[in-house]
Length: 367
Image 1 (cartoon, rainbow, N blue to C red):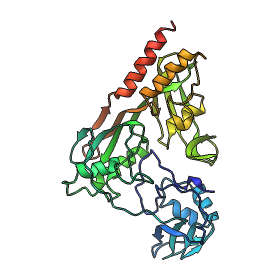
Image 2 (tube, one colour):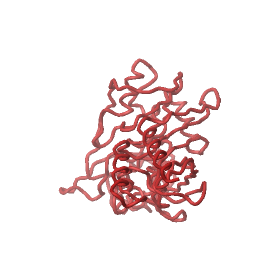
Image 3 (cartoon, one colour):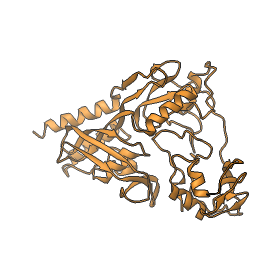
Image 4 (cartoon, helix red, strand yellow):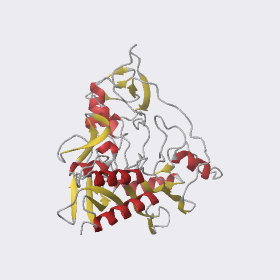
C-alpha cells in the first residue's frame, strides 16, 4: 500500500518543503516488527487555522502530492495528529501537529562538498546551467549519499556566501535520471529558485530530449497522454494509467521522428509535463521502449532479423551505450532577474554519437 508515497519528480522541485515525501525508498507503510514508527515530516497548524480536513490541509503543504496519495497514507496509519493516527476526514484545528510517520528512521545528513568535475555551460550571480554526464546521480538518496551532482555543486559554489547546499530554497530546480545525460538549471538564490520553479510549474520552460527507441513509426509525429504512477508490480518502475483516472499524475509527451534506422528510430521528445521516467514510461506504453533501457525492457532485441549476425550487431550496440539512450538536449527559460529568454543546447555525448552512427550505417545496408 502506498508505494507511490516516494516519487522523484522530474518536474520542478517543491517550493514548500515542509512536508515533502522522502527521497528514501519506501517499501511499505506497515509498522516495523516492534511496532515503531518514525517521524519524517511535521507541520504545525497556526493559530488562525480554520477547521479543515487533514487531507485538504496537507494538500496546501504538498504541492506535488495528490490528495489520493495522502488519503492512502492516512488509511495506512501514517498520518498522525497530536501523536495519534487519524483518517483523512479528521478536521485540523489551530495548533494541531500533523506528522508523517514511516516504518524506518529518516536518513539525516548534511550535503558535503566534493571535488567532482562538472561541465558548466553558463553561470551568473543568479543561476548556473550544468551539462550532466550519464551515470551521475543528481541528488543524494538511498545508496547514493555521496558522489552526486549536489555534492559537486557544493564544491563548485563553496566560496559563494549566498549558497548553502543544505538550504532547500536554493539549488536544483528540476532533475533528470542518473543514466540520462544533459542539461539542468541550478538556482543560486532563493529568489531565482522561486521564479524558476514557477516557470516549470506553469510549463513555460522549453525542453527537448533525443532518444533512440525500438521500432518504426507510421506517423512522423505524435502525442502521448497518460498519467504516470508507480507500477504496482514493480515499484522501481513507473507505468501509465488512463488520463481520466485518479492514479498517478497527468503527463503529456510530444514526439517527432528525426531519423529512421529500420529496427530502431531516432526521435525528439518535447515534455509538456515532467514526471518521473516520463519519456521512458510513455514510449514503452506505445510500444517503443528506449534502446538499452534495462528497467523498461529496452535491453532485449525487440525488432530486426532473427540471425546470429544481427543479434551480435545489437549486442555490440548495447555495449556502446550501456544505459538508456536518452539525452536532455535543450533547455530554455526566462532569466529570473533580467527577464531575458535563455536557451541552451547540449551536444550529443560520445556514446550516443557512436550508437546512432552505428545504426545509421546498418540502415544503409537495408536500402
